[in-house]
Length: 111
Image (cartoon, rainbow, N blue to C red; front, side, top):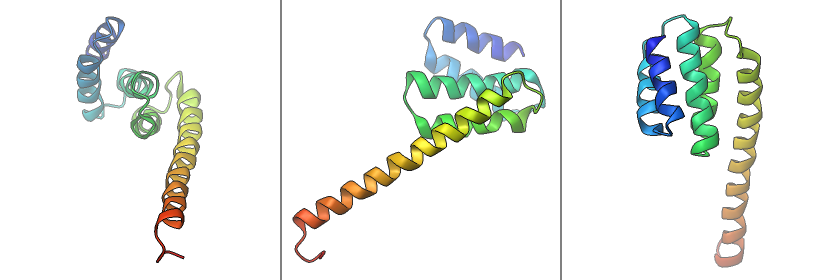
């Protein structure tokens, strides 16, 4: 889509905030098209690689197939979604473990 191409131009200029805005607008229209799926894929990549935001990356990789199930990079998007979801789960478990260790070490009533 034209909007996706505009977003890609912003992205190429490292204007990520503008790119994200255009991509989100495109995805929110929910058109069943390659351009909409590309916008979701590009959003996921920005969140994953630029902002290191695994949560948002998982969301947008997951939307790719729902937006257009014949998208060229659908398998990559699915694999990334699975991998990053597992990474997110591990990260969340580590956070929980750290909280428990802190309580064990510092809260005498916790035992």
